[in-house]
Image (cartoon, rainbow, N blue to C red):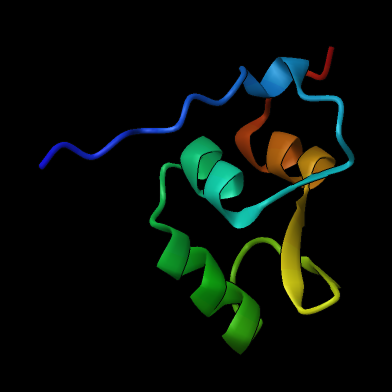
Length: 71
């Protein structure tokens, strides 16, 4: 069985203020579960925003962490 890898736009072109866990994991080259662990233990380099029980990762903070310029 093949797994389908979602295609995400380059981080420089993302205009949303926050991205979901799958996108954040892709940009940070980490597993989604790693980011969920950071959120749960509050010990990672980023802190998510919780919106109705879901995690949203600030796009600007991801850019700063990776030293990527915004569009």
